[in-house]
Image (cartoon, rainbow, N blue to C red):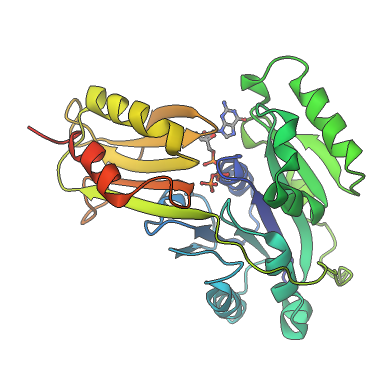
Length: 308
Ligand SMILES: Nc1nc2c(ncn2[C@@H]2O[C@H](COP(=O)(O)OP(=O)(O)OP(=O)(O)O)[C@@H](O)[C@H]2O)c(=O)[nH]1
């Protein structure tokens, strides 16, 4: 029995993990395996995804569209040799990934036979201006989509969803556009009822030269972070950041882990799971356009968050 793949793409911080988490939490007994790709060296996403009944495989420190493409194919073949096999595989790409390259790799004849790419979902932050869709990477992520999910409608003004839909329609893409409030998408839309129907092969177009546009820097500490100092630090770094996320204990509440997110210029902090045994007490991944943020600057700013 072939195992259909759902490929989730979308720009940095658009809400992919939130969508994947929601669909895993509403798996209704299906055995779903998730492959999660973090561009950064620390696999934060795998820790934020709790509910994959058939396990989460984390591929970190690179992108499955280029440097980790071999790892993706090896991971798929390992999942397909499991007994019992998963019923579905969800692949969450990193926000910097060009999914056309991943689609091309998934068209490998053996993979197509055993794990056909059934659906490509592109997640779009509806609270960002529609002009963001002019970005070549976002265009590429939209171009391969069967379904486009609009997230963060609760953060956007009233007409934002309609404006984003109009901008997507203007691109004349074949995708269906749905609203995904806090990651909610009906699983019937993402998982086909009839897995025996083989999806048609896809043509992602000719391979384009890959362009190194983003880089990732990590910061870890064995000391808890002071919240007011972290606020100051993020304020300083924010203009240079495309994305940041992290897990850490705070001076204010040691022994509890907090989840820090910075996406589309917005920072949030939420309580997380219990601290991971053996992991540093603070782990934060930063993504910036190439050359914008140096390791020395980052460390200087971040070390102030734990200084006595
Ligand atoms: N208010 C609100 N926040 C959302 C929604 N969807 C996602 N977020 C928040 O947006 C931030 C980024 O969401 P993620 O799901 O981690 O985004 P992502 O696309 O997986 O991020 P990367 O994989 O790092 O590119 C998190 O703080 C989420 O809680 C939504 O519908 N409403």
